[in-house]
Image (cartoon, rainbow, N blue to C red; front, side, top):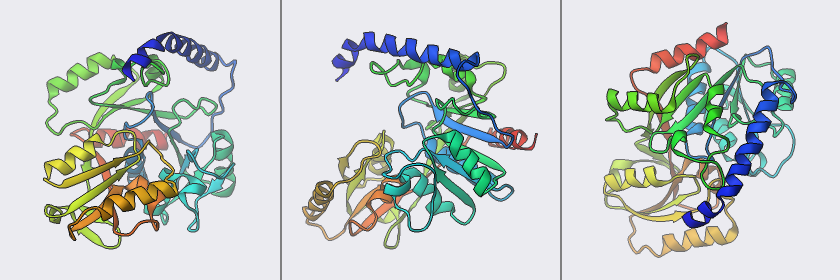
Length: 340
């Protein structure tokens, strides 16, 4: 696979040229960007996935939902519906996508969640139907038809965008120069032991601009697994687990479970995978092959949105992100933008 990516290097150069020209035409106004009077915060990345956009959006929801009327707008990746749609109780992942359904399931009494591939149309529809105080755009950093008032770009600690290359040789959606549009840069999935020296090295490598601030965050796994009932992860040492993942990077979760001495049989699927009937049979067969009675099927919260009701003994593990000592400074940046 790596050899093939290197062979495709000329295509990466062409891709860089195309995306650079596209961004330049937006920058000089040849391509139109629509801005809005209400605060719009776009959260995204320069790479193809796995940087932690979902927990970052959820962090913003928790930060803002008590004081503001919050709407989250996503394209609803891999949904089967079309156009603008506000998430409702009867909707499934097929209707709105797995991540929007996750936002709705967790915060349905506090926020509005909508999907629309055309973010400009989606924001206008939200203004007409809901009139929110603030809109959070999920995975919209490259969606330049909307000019958000505030941009947050995420990059993984062990896979910084400065160390990557453009598609198809690397995983970048656009050149690392695109990070210059960001107001905040968040380095995600950092180790808890991250030192001040390491932070300074990352700041230097990313070449943070004067108009930007950089923050560092880490992932917390919920100790309680949710499903038919609530199970504390500390009770799983004597259980055998079939782990089902359809996310960009399952390695941190695998490492977390193994560090807890949990016996894991991993079934790995592509990111945002639409589980077919044959996939469900494969999962059930793997589960049935375990002879122990102390067993269950574990998945991510996002994958649970697509698997719920299709498999018994199914549980999911939630994650949150937390900032290091800069959390209050991050919060102030967000709230200052909204209140200006």
